[in-house]
Structure formats: structure tokens, C-alpha cells
Image 1 (cartoon, rainbow, N blue to C red):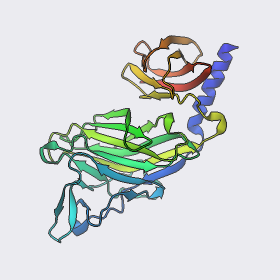
Image 2: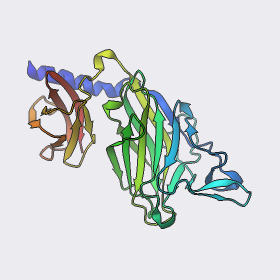
Image 3: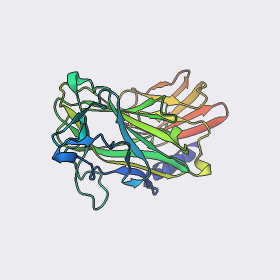
Length: 297
């Protein structure tokens, strides 16, 4: 009976990915205001915050020297290091051209290491936020993109790191956001860039898409259980709950066999002993139990 219950749980979890998800916010970067035929975004009037092309949300940039501006030959005030190069059709909504992109360059003395693109949107009555976008770079551009989340716009928590982003061909990035964002009226997501080695080295972003499902009362997670990074290849995952009490963690494979059991006093679970595959992570805090799918690469 226990194995049958676990298999039913797995079936329910796997079916989540096939449920309908709606666009919360989407930016295709095809209508960027680049005065005088140049690449720099307009700073006066300010091109940021940038409204979503679909859904509702705003995009802005910050950190480093992203606010540095210059006056071009036509007398337009533009950003020095926030530019738009050619885009991609990867992850584009139907009918959208490759168009442009939004790109941050390394800046003078690579002072834009640590600069970020930030998104603000609402998860009211929504859950299971998924992020996807096309990205590429230059060889001397940023080689890591770190995603973090916040509900107050001030205190951010990292949840995923994308590496080797200084490749010269666009590729697709997909990452789930933490469950703490489920149902929140206002959420902030940042992608912070590091690793650029020249002033003009860059990362480009296009077709930035945020989708989510409808929040249902029976799927509300009372523990606030969050599991990241997911997928993981680091040998460990971070498990947090709203109360941050001690946690009893049990991991099952796809056949319902228990492969790991641990009383977790902190937030880090060592999964280095597990092979690549799909697992079910069951977390119990007090009298409340919650379960999530974990993918190990």
C-alpha cells in the first residue's frame, strides 16, 4: 500500500508539467527604443522600467555602472553599457521575429560584474512559476547568471545558477522559481551577471517568459517547502520551509523505493550518493508533510 501511494504521488507530481500554464509576463525585446541607429537604450526619456509585451510586469536594470550614460551624435542621452544586439527566435511566442535583445556589457574595468536585470510581477492566484529565455554571450562576457527572488524588493535569495553563459550561440534556459512565490501579490526576480573580463564582453537576453498555473486551495503548501537548485548537479540541494524548524527528509526513487532518509538540522541535504534521475522528496515538519519532485542531472 505504501508503494502504491508513493507511485500515485509521483504520477500527480509529473502531471503538473502537463497542466495548462498561462503567461504571467513576457518580453520579446523587439520594440527597443535605440535612438540614432545606435545600440544603447534611451535614457532620456528613460526606457526603464520596461513594460511586458504580454501579460503584466516590469523590467529594469541595476547594479554596477548600468546607470552610466552618454550623449550620442544626435544629442540623445543613452545608456553606455545597456544595449540591444540581434535577438533569437528561441522561446519566442508564435509570430514573434528574432528582433533584438537586451544586453549588459562588462563596462569600464568590468565594473558591471554584479549588475542585474530585475523583473517585477504578480503571482496573485498563481503557482508553480516557470522562467525561460534565450541567452548567449561573447567569449569575454559574463560566464554566470545567478537567479534570485524576493517579495520585498530588498532581500534576495539565490535559487539557481546558470553557468557557461559566455558562448556565442543562443541557447534556451529553463528554471522553476521557488514555491515561496506562490500566491504572492508582488514578486521580484533578478538575474545577476558575473565573470566578464572585458568592457564590451556581454550577455544577451531575449524572449524572457514567465508562466504559471492557477493556485488551487488543495495544492497550497502550508510548510512553504522550497527545494533548489532543481534540477541539480552539485551534489546537494537546499531545503527551506516557512518556519525553518528541523526537518525529516525522505527521498524515494521512481519505483517508490526509499533511497535516503535524514533528519535535517540545517537547510542543506547531501544527495551526492544518488544517481542521475527523478526522485520524490518528502519533507515533514511537525505534523505537516509535503512532497516535491527532484531531478538530479
